[in-house]
Length: 407
Image (cartoon, rainbow, N blue to C red):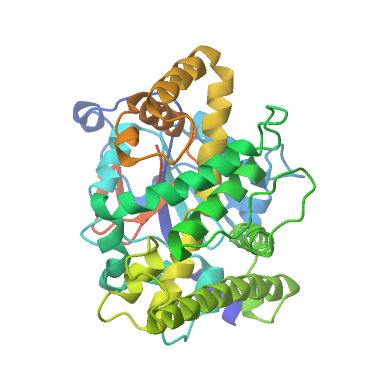
């Protein structure tokens, strides 16, 4: 009965997907289209492909040529077959994909004061009933209040500037890793090593030892759990949630991974508090953990949950963003050379990179933005929930429907 109830629940997600081209749809274009139609009229895969969980699996290998690791290719297939808008059953949710930049803008302008995203069922199940839930499953004002202490720090340029020297050291180690043979292979993995090391430095003020100096070197324990966490989390989004009925082997491994990361954050937090009591550390030490400790009203549990969320949040997307940036630069040697010249002129050959140097790198920012435009680091985009009824491309999308941006 629990599974039947789960499969009958319907949450619609609107996903805006980048195609690499800017096809602009004007208000006049939309007005000239057919009269407003209902959600059920949006084109997309039909028949058995609309079954919860199973429907999506039937659109992937071995039944088609599309891999679960390349959902972006499946999205482009939808675009070419169904046009600028389509709805697809993904997991338990109906998802609406948008492929027109101007329509994507309309969807984002209707997300309300507190942007809302569909939660990931596996995380929701894990954190259910906990006294201090994760930011990752909260919505609306609850999410805002829980995240506010970290936002105060992250939104202040003068505060963020103090992190740059330490993050510069992480970048130096990453570059040194490839100096010997000047070749970068299997990019996602070393980029994940870099993002994990950088996130640990930013959150805890500590080096985690994730950047291996040589191929085949021993992998840091935290990195092993990070990779396992994201692997199971990604797979769970497109699989039948058997873990709701019994504790599956995959769910046990997931609990092991997230428990390790939570325990690691707690150990660092207790160490920092002990050093503060013994006055063996500087209260202005450059890391988010120390900033949260110094924030009134932040309990130990709140700090620990925020740190784990912040630590995990950008690991995979940062690694993918770097991977695609390096790939695009490799395809355009002339642009790579121009970027190299800018960095050579503005960044010191040795020592930490300072804030003023980052302000003098406009071409680097342009390259990164162009890489985002061509290939968004998350395959199906940034998902959001509409806060009011919205008309998109001649279809009425009701309040409570979600949208995701890959534009």
